[in-house]
Length: 309
Image (cartoon, rainbow, N blue to C red):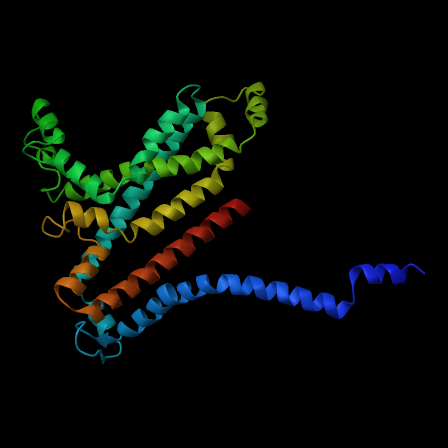
């Protein structure tokens, strides 16, 4: 007897199905502009770039299909191999620096009682600044004539060392640029770690203190394991960003001196826009993309395996 009123309130099944279908199509139409932009400005260029990597193209004349010649040439290209080595060194140094400094800042601010919001803003500010401005500031600081680093070296009696001209010395230029990138984004990593630290219950630390664990023991047994997801995110972001490092290197050294800071990113730029060899530059980009994907996947696999253990 109650089935009739219930059915009348809900409406006939075909009508509800039509309403549900219409509701789903309305969401699909709302997502359509974003999908078109995604396909046109991301997927489209990726597919086109993959095609051009198998061609010889100067950017003006029609591309000529040459198969795997660009990749065969790259296998014996010492300049590309050197740029790849520099990129990997940059990545290792910067990832370690950004994660280490960011974690240290987060631990300090997590214990602070006053001025936390102000200090967070101070440390995070470089990540919001223009890379061109940062390169100009640090280039001035590294200047052998008027830079603070050079003046400090002279005052400390280190005027004849690499500190006299950091960016002009082949042995120190790579480290000099790495310090700038670490300084720029350490605050960004700090925010990630602060969010992770806030999610660790204080009761865990209180229980550990009762058991006699404090300081380094608490960090090793509680903070570090529970902070693993935040560390994974920070390392992933830093890896993906620094494997395609370009801006800071191009603006501060241009890949010099004598190619000491040449990265794959700056080499791709030179190959395309200075040598007008667009097909070869796209092939270099494809190889770099594959390397980034493999490194990121390997990092995620190692992280998930470690968390499962």
